[in-house]
Length: 436
Image (tube, rainbow, N blue to C red):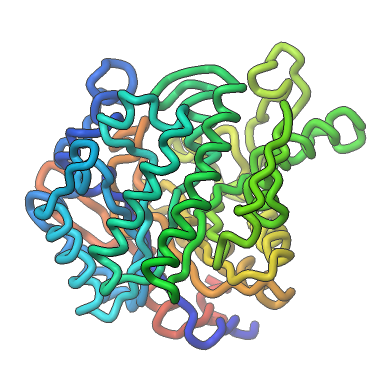
């Protein structure tokens, strides 16, 4: 078996998000959501998380990231910290993020900074957050200020993480804050997020002309359970385009093609310097006319992946399907835009690290295959560096390469961490690794 070598200068990274690791983020809408019983599994709260804010344990975690031979890390800025009240900026918060970014650079790790990773300042949520068009200039102002304050330490930016996840979980199935189920409102939120990204993209380039700016797009391929049935094929294709392709296509042609009407946004054309891809699994969907809020479809349980799923995997992947081939097709489709591609998230929840090595190697091999087919993938960020607070699932799901004992904040690298360290060091998947 021949080793699979990756391009010279490839970024091998890990990822985190502010609310999931910092702890003490008590001035945003997710904190408020956590306080209602039933919203978060086991009643978990992000009070301490990984103790980055008060304990500054990011230094220890970045030491571990350096020991894994990674040369990049994706993290996010918490808007509610740097602008705790509308129009009021926190020097202390900016000082914290300067220390974080400097710590990465001191270790030879390139930062990729996300400006919005699901959370909103409480004051913004009280104004309707992304439901109101007024969010666009507010986000533009926020992006401008962050780049002015931190731009000497970072020139690589994601404006918004997974807009479609945000609008689906918050406005279609209502499992996340603000807990609404209104499809037309979800489409309005999606349009406002796109407009805000475009405004921020241009604002960042005004401050930092050489910046690289993009979106982190959640792409979950949706395939028909019965491809011989025309209606199932049509429904799956429609949902796949709506969920996975809508925003990327709008950034190409300046038109947002909603199921309920179109919006012309000419300034969106070309407003991305790279394409960020967050990929975990695919979904098979079947026709279900009793599910109008789900666009008349329902996901089916996954087919076997060659191993028996444990309870944790069943919980996360219970409606998805581990599918490296779909990862290849996703990256090949994204190549059509002629932009560099970064896999900004990919990973698996696995408390005992039984499945992660297999998942990691299979998906990196799939990524290598996509690169061989012409996809300009320039980097890969594993989700996540460390076990953290996983939104509605609380601490139940463990995605980290580093195990975190939340009671003691003790860090322990998992076997998959050592595997990833070897891959990053060699910039390749060795033959013995793939065979094993």
